[in-house]
Length: 272
Image (cartoon, rainbow, N blue to C red; front, side, top):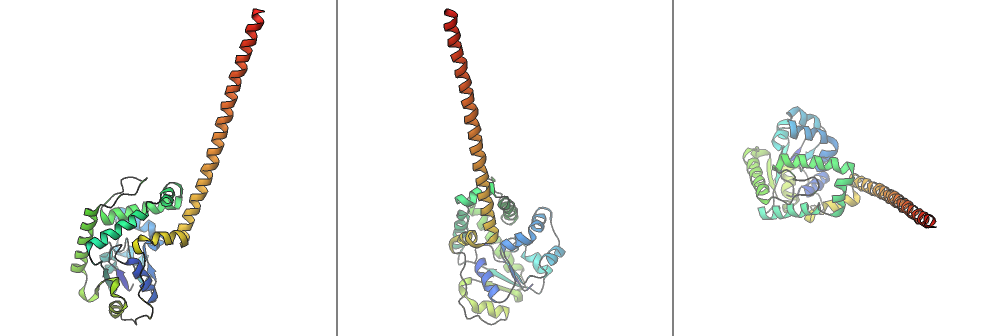
């Protein structure tokens, strides 16, 4: 491993993914952590893990970014002591918390809400994210059926503690404190590589990464297909249920009508 990105989510991690890939690195981001090591990470967060786990999981990976690896940066560095550490930070705490809130709000749209109910793949993904979020932020989602609003106090406390700890504990000769607005020069100098000719990437503005993934990412496209299949099945079952209800209700009313008619005829005949 060459790079451990210790910066928290919403500090330019998606921009860093593109940048590190442009520098020729194999990068595992949030989705790769889930797809390739989801069960490992759930076990580590719930039961614990070892340095050998991290050596096994990331032996062929050049760089790691975002959750859960920013939270476990120190353990990863113990597994890969030659790796360099990059602490990405925003200009201010206010910028960071507002960016986090904007991304959280993206999760409240109708499609993602329905996927939590009707896509098996998304339900597993949601469980993974909730487990990782609890470990890193100490905040448990109160309900499976809704996304929490950001707890600004706890999130800011986590942001401050994490950054302070990295600054204190990371080896100074292996640490770069970096803002993505600084561009290629400090990053490439730190990594000892040539500066690309293309502009430094700027990704996930105002949490739009979810819109992009919903449109292009095969995993999210699969979850949307599962949603549509589930909605179709619900529609068919609902239609069939209504049909049966109407049919039996009609049969019941018809039976009542026949019995009433017979009663009237009997009375007339009896009177006669």
